[in-house]
Image (cartoon, rainbow, N blue to C red):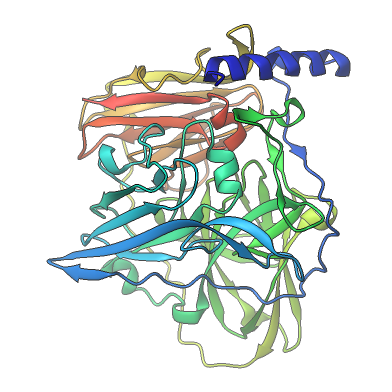
Amino acid sequence: MPTRRDALRLLGLGAVAAAGAQGCSLLAGTPQPQLLTSAAPLPRQFAVPLPVPEVAKPVRSAGGVDFYELTERAAEAEVLPGLRTPIWGYGGTFPGPTIQAERGRRTVVKLINQLGEPTVLHLHGGHTPPESDGYPTDLVAPGAAREYVFPMEQRAATLWYHDHRMDYTGPQVWRGLAGMFLVRDEPERALPLPDGERDVPLLICDRSFAADGTMLYPGLENRPGVREAYMGGVLGDVILVNGAPWPELRVARARYRLRLCNASNARVYELTTGGPMVRIGSDGGLLAAPRTVKQVRLAPGERAEVIVDFAAYKLGQHVELRNLAGEGAQGKVLRFVVDRDEADDSAVPPRLAVVEALDPAKATVTRDFDFSSGSMHGGVGWLINGRPFDPKRMEARPKLGDIEVWRLTSDVAHPVHLHLDAFQVLSVNGERPDGPPEWKDTVELRDAQTVEIVTRFTDYRGRYVLHCHNLEHEDMAMMAGFEVV
């Protein structure tokens, strides 16, 4: 079997050859995400209802602990109308069931692997002990099971869970290993925000399909990585919401809370309804105060919560959720049909939550992390500080309880995800962001950009990772380990 080093070397040499034919230099950091075109005809837009994933039920609850089971297995789903698509799914569904957890109430998830490949479960945005965080080499072998313990000592937020296997996260998430995870708490519950059927999780991703409905993915046979043309990331040409292509949701003339999650491998979304939206939450939960916006930009891994008031529209009116960062069919996401009047006692209060501002003046150290393509083992790969990921090497050893500033720089765009603790953005190319601080766990680095973040390492010692959440970049070594000591 070829080693990881051999595979990436072969891939890199092919990428260099392709770059030379195109008159560009990958070593200068130029590969961009590429569209993978479906062989199947694209389905008609807004022809299927929006599915809402089922809410998982604990197999038991005892002593302040809720126990869940997630069985990963192969299944078939009707993603494109009239065709059967093989998937890998938690519980055999795509997306997996939504887990709803309560702050301060321990959640234990038993992962049962009935697939033919190893997997790893990561709670994206979870404040999690290292043994349950989903370190990329903590594999659950085929036929094996593992318990992940999530203490839930964190504020209410929209999280998601997905596979995190080293070198193979991209294809395994692409096949369907992802689902939503919502954390609730009493301060959030006391707010008069929309709830029940008007609190809607929207897991957005893109996929491409063969003529028979099988998902296409440009992976390499028995080797990590993708074909050189897709080294910059894989873009699908079918936009899925909760596993359905360009679906439609019938809504009342009332406020709705939309929990937006970008679960794509490499696609960025610039989401808009054409009217005002009220942004109330980010990766790490509620903002201090609502912000009226015209659009919301989400890089892979990022989440946002928005309120849309459909009382502003007439009965029978259609409202499209569009993607300004896409063209043609990829510029559309979802359609709402306003079809009824209903009572609505929800509201958006002027204050939502208390968000502590971390003081960068109290930082014990500032660290630099450079995200770029570069020479690796005689070829080309995606690197952090000029080095590929080595699971045994720790790039930083922050002390428990310390505040640190991390300076992130890019060549091309990289959505950067930090495990363990949320952070706040201090500056983008030297300029402070507008508005009060908000909690993030993923931030988009755009081309040739520098972003400074500040974080505090709390509760758990052990090893974690910082990585690019363009999953093709991640699989091709753009990850760094750190250990909290």
